Image (cartoon, rainbow, N blue to C red; front, side, top):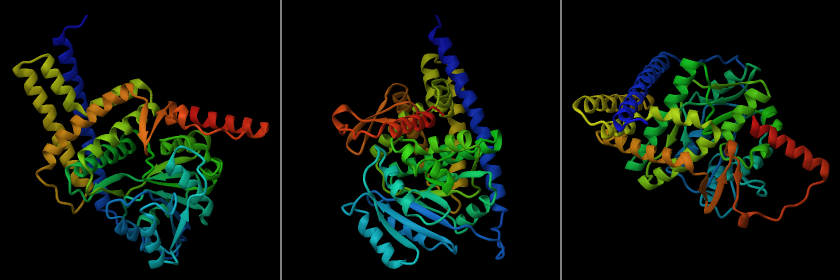
Length: 416
């Protein structure tokens, strides 16, 4: 079999390959940033604007929630509504939403969830919100986000193309005041957002992320008003696949980012979130691809390589890998957050983030259960959720034709 020396060298080669890919990604983000800085928002009063319904599910009070809602309620766009959803009136976000409705009564509506059709609490709210929405374009927007002033104009112009069925936005992260939030925003900028940008520029792939996702009403209707993804945890991934594969429409990534506002997360909260995310991600892609993606976090592999094959040369190679990763993350972090200060603590935060993400990735190789709002749920292929037997309600039998049709539709969606 292979010696530890050979394995160590192989890990260093893999880490070096990952560093090269990160250099390409850095160039893509730089190119995108350069193009973005030279683009001026379109201003054509005669150009018709599409009506948009913003669906914003709330659950608890996010960091600076009031300011987040104000950002969306005061967008300079004539044809939109903002629907705030809560599960029930006991939610801590309910009075915040009520205050927003009182402040902007002609723009904001409050919608309380009706029933609990599935295991995904976000989708449960979206089902009620979509039914209450009045417009053709439905924009799913997380409660912890803010956007640029021309956000809705770009959406409207993009959907002038009838071939577009879904639109998503690159993710950035702002507001960090704690180490946990700094690592969270680092991940959003350097992994999620940078990955969306580079996939589009290098491979022509538009990656759908549910933090900001726009759908035509016809797409939502095809999903039975989101009911077909009510028991799916990665609903954004499944919807993106449905749009392109089943409806033969395009999914596109926007030019401007959406900003994830993370201010006061703890390191523990950060780690638990990405432990859950790694499990979900692995259920959505083949294991070989999940393994290959790990080289985009090359620092742990380089350090393991040195441990298995210690020498001056391997230590030097590992140092180069770590240096490239630090350069990539700090540079991308700065470009994805124009006008934001980058503190010295960002450098050690990158290293800690990478170690924690590696641990979460290893766990995702084997684990298939996630803790979700006090319940342990098993995640199957396609991120389909299965509750523990004790949590299963007594099923209400459907008429035979309806039951057969629902089974066929759900199976087709998840297999695709």
